[in-house]
Length: 121
Image 1 (cartoon, rainbow, N blue to C red):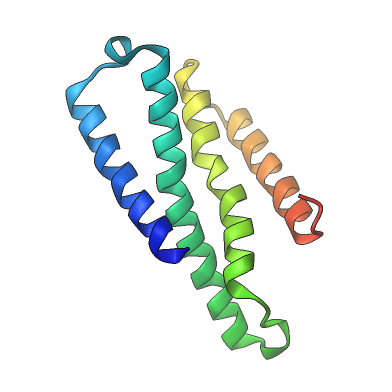
Image 2: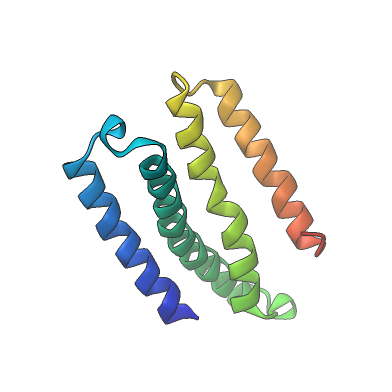
């Protein structure tokens, strides 16, 4: 699964770079914008899983009692954390990002991470 996520993230990065240099949002239409946001999510998912895995590995080295299934946790938390940049991109497409919108996205992330920690989501 790790290699598959790495491959998908690399392909998503290549598609994003190609889309940004070759097309404008009005050229690609609604389907192209959907593909753009999907590719962004896949790219940020790979980065978030990597970041979560590093965090949980460092935490396991510091506190031996909390060393659990690091891969499983990193995927669950990565799915939630990768949503934040997409939400900020969506907010920015409606005319800019304010402190209120950043606070709302941060609050949503905290609630989602809490739900993941309690195995609700």
